[in-house]
Length: 253
Length: 253
DNA sequence: CGATAAATTGAACTCTATCAATAGGTGTGG
DNA sequence: CCACACCTATTGATAGAGTTCAATTTATCG
Image 1 (cartoon, rainbow over the protein chains, first blue to last red):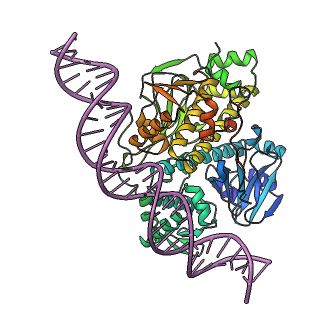
Image 2: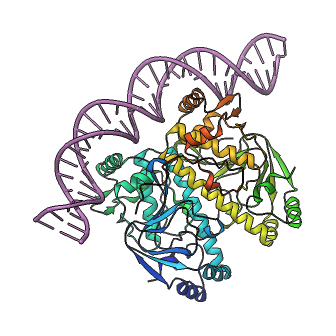
Image 3: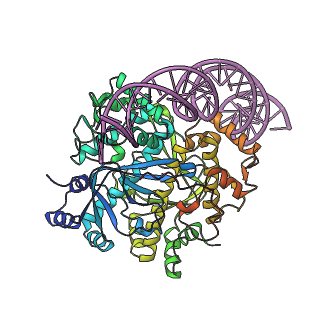
């Protein structure tokens, strides 16, 4: 089975055997982390570049009054801080949500990868997808009700996990607690609990322990107003079902 | 007076006279747009790279049901789509909020700029700042009340506009309507109106027509829990006032 | 098995949305 | 210059989504 990183980058373009070997070699240095361990912390100057090989992590910001905001999830194949070396210090932290395997790449290793045009291209692509995802989250949070937000998050994770071979087509293992979901959507844990119940009652999801099952993917995606275009993938992974109607009226011109 | 772009990039590093000349030359081709005109639209394949030289614009997404989410503001010196050429098509639109001057750069021009190491570095830095701003907005939206969100937005715009010489230290001209503010913060126009009144009543802002005045910058920043670190600027521009207390407890480790 | 974290429930409360109406501004054409 | 149309801002009343506080049950882990 190819690594999650290769599966992810191949969403952008096929890589030569030589490039694949270089990538495999670059991530050879692995490190195992337990759940809820910080990979890098807010305020630190970024040294190595980190990559999630296996497991699940999240970016988060600590705010005034002890509030926490989770601003991204990192699944296998995702870089934590590919470019932050340019900035003086981290403006957020990253921590694992379950036991995970992390690769540490030195600045020099990254630079040598960047000298391979196809790899450089694929890595830049992955950065843009991260940014597009951030934009989608912002729109999701601003203009959807809590139940649709939650559904949207599940739809996204389903696609991303399946794309790297870390989840099935109809579900996956949810590693985060309801408190972490709350910090992701900007709501309370109590409300997370109630929203999850609504989604279950509506038969949109099934949740047994930590295992999430989506009985009807198209139905959940329609409810969530989920369109996978922002993930900029190709092929089957991105469901490609009939879009929800009425997506583009009310122009701002 | 140096251009907004040069002022902005000099937040990253000083550029040689030669680099400055190249940049000035690259943005020589200008175009004037009225207010509420799209610069580039969702779904379009990105061709040229666009840059705001003067005026004010915003990124937005149109969503199911005609909802709109504004996910970024672009002030003079900001690129609209520096890297999106890598992606097949735009996943959002950009439109002006007031009459603006836009530069169109061909792909070739951008590439030739990127061959200058100092310019390439500064442009990459500006991309990272855009991304950091997106993260801050997400945290802002998720974990702050509407009045603090609004105050935070004003604090950010004050710093960004002042940094490129497009605003005073104690205020600036707000070009957007209350409806656009609503689409930015994810609330209704009615609520925007009431929140603005609260801020006025609390003497945190003054609003005469479209002119926003901040009588006490430190007070507004403290109320908004605004810390300008995510803008990764240097020097006086970024207020640098006493931070609000209690910013970093409640670790997630 | 006991201790601790996570999930669940209830009731009261607050913030924000919704609906609807009014007032103020601005630009255009007659 | 006025009148009209239209967009933007403002206000009030009511409904609803999400919060808060507090208690209880259910997992999880050493």
